[in-house]
Length: 151
Ligand code: DQA
Figure 1 (cartoon, rainbow, N blue to C red):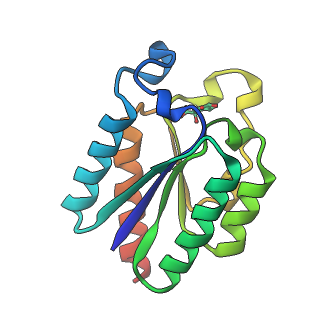
Figure 2: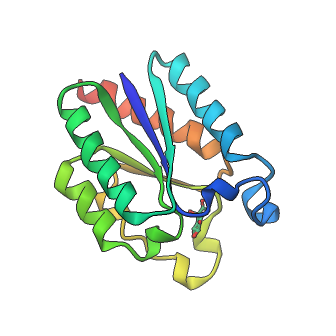
């Protein structure tokens, strides 16, 4: 089955964006890591990035349908700054029942207070925070475990 790997705003800048916080790995590197991790577990990673909230919502709707038909085990989602602002993304996850693991490269709780609240966390099955880009691997492994436990 597929694993949706969804990255939100500014994550296309990984590698050059505040490398002291987000590291030197590019989005391409991260997506390769996700593909490798998914394949080792017998899945395929479907990696997408958008800077547009509406596009992310459309992809969540589509993924919810794919999860219902058994073609998708869920999603690993780094919503970037939309994490801290978007009721619409919260509603999209709740409304579709998509199984989501929320990922943040940095430890958002050790940063500015405006990063401490997440609209996604109450809708997420699990959260991986502060492990750098390796967090995507941990999130896919965790998603696979939840899927296996529920299957
Ligand atoms: C981030 C943390 C967010 O606060 C920030 O807006 C990002 C990246 C992270 O991966 O650490 O864009 O989600």
